[in-house]
Length: 186
Image: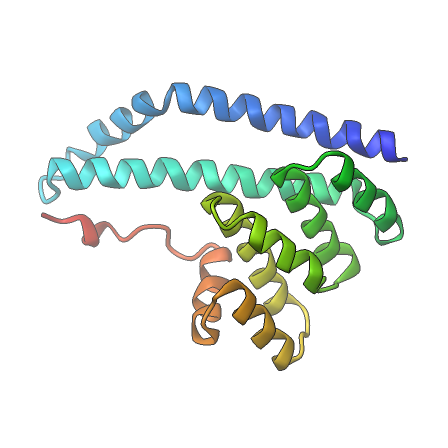
């Protein structure tokens, strides 16, 4: 079972790595395409259009990362196989594997594993993307499943999320508006 799980995760992560390589190599073309299409809006400055295009590109890439990790978790996850996932994370000590493990914990065990969250938070302190993905998965869980208020407070303290901001994060993780075009007007 462990070998099959590792093979499944590795195949998905190879796809993700390939996507990121292609995406990075064509980033300038994608940004230019968005820029050219948006430049038809005379109310936006060229710099505002470029900033919007870059944010749109980053948002797209971030969402593909998030969805891919969640799909991996959905495909191989089972609450009965926790020991296997723990061993895999030890053997394959990467941020992607940690995020898959967290996603499985949250989806299948409906469990807030505080030691895992603390460890991941420390390890991701210099990795903005992984830190944000971790926070998104956790905040989404907090609003999908009943969690005691004091547990929410502990998590908010560990992740440095203000309690009043959790609702905002929850809304953004549920497909809230990505970007406000008006914020880019010159």
